[in-house]
Length: 177
Image (cartoon, rainbow, N blue to C red; front, side):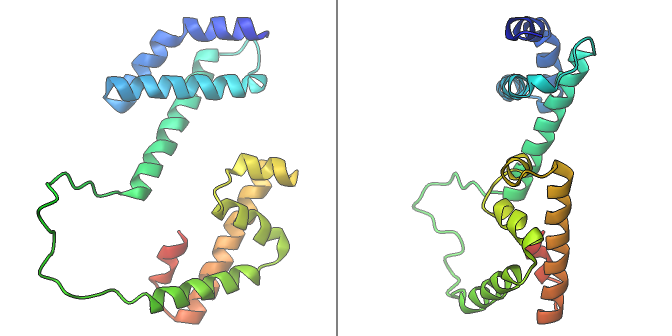
């Protein structure tokens, strides 16, 4: 399928995609953004599309996955937006100061444990920590995508076990999740 044919097929499916995006996001502007993101990803991975198969289903799967990934990102961030005027101080009665010593010790221990991992786990895990996507890691290391995901999973599991042994606390596993 040529680029022009692919674009033409996508344009024909834009209305149902927008309706599906509206169903997911419940917001017109977010839905339009989601359709644009789907268009970008579909065009980027157009060589993965099998001609003479259901393009609508393929595009909606891309859209659904993009929506889920974005939702998970937002949930992980859980940013508190304070829209009050700046002349008010939140929790101004509290005079406690957070001690950074404990967190820097934990950070140093985590880095030490990461460095003790075998290279086949450590390298993909560090790349993932630096913000690389699984696909980018797979391309860079010339490995299958599933192998990259497995190695990162194994690295996380080993780090959780090591941290439990070191700190004898359950809350340390939350840091690595």
